Amino acid sequence: MKKLFAIVAVMGLMTFGLTQSVMAQEEAAASTEVVDSAAVDSAAVAEEAPVAEEAPVEEGSIHKELKTKFIEGDAGFMSLVAVALVIGLAFCIERIIYLSLAEVNTKKLMAKIEEALAKGDVEGAKTVCRNTRGPVASICYQGLMRIGEGIDVVERSIVSYGGVQTAYLEKGCSWITLFIAMAPSLGFLGTVIGMVASFDAIEAAGDISPTVVAGGMKVALITTIFGIVVALILQVFYNYILSKIEALTADMEDSSITLLDLIMKYNLKK
Image (cartoon, rainbow, N blue to C red; front, side):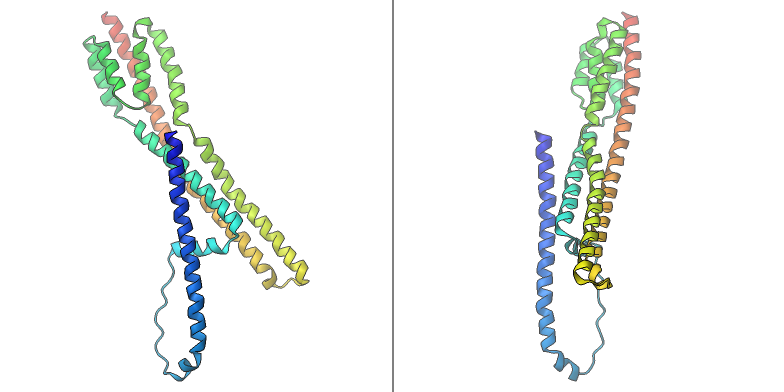
């Protein structure tokens, strides 16, 4: 439930920010229209006045350009692409937080376990594992729970529980891949519908002039661009998540081998 609340909170914040940006852009467009009407009324006076040097026009930032193109695109498909981005990023952030919390200093952990087992203090080694977060400590704890049942039982327990911990690490990644595939698909769907709208305009006008098809083609291309951009953003986060999962899996395997060696040494001393 906590993960679900976190995802919903992130989605709400990002959606609210996007809505505020679009509303601000619309208000700016409305104020621009008022300024343009006032400029038309004062055109005659401006012609008689001496020509002054034109002020340099500031180029719009990338953020403003993106907002403008988002407004120019079809509202239905652009909103779907934005929702795919927000939900996909929510899953990515949740996974990154979970994996970051799962990372521990495995060398320090195994050194504490080795020290406790060298003293014959199995309960102390279990306490070290219980007080340490992450899948490595959980796997070591499961192995120590069966330390008196033989090395084969310990190994099977570690392997079985390691598979469970790996599944926990990969939880939610399938949803990220879904939105990576969905974003460009929605963009291409908007492209097809924009093309259909352009042909409908040609049929209604009975002419193939560029002005007739420009609107539909523009919407089609904008939706495609945004769909591909969203997929690229989510893909970068997804690859980063996979790299963290691979690193944690390698630590789990290395720590499991080390734990088996420590348990064998402990059994030989007994």
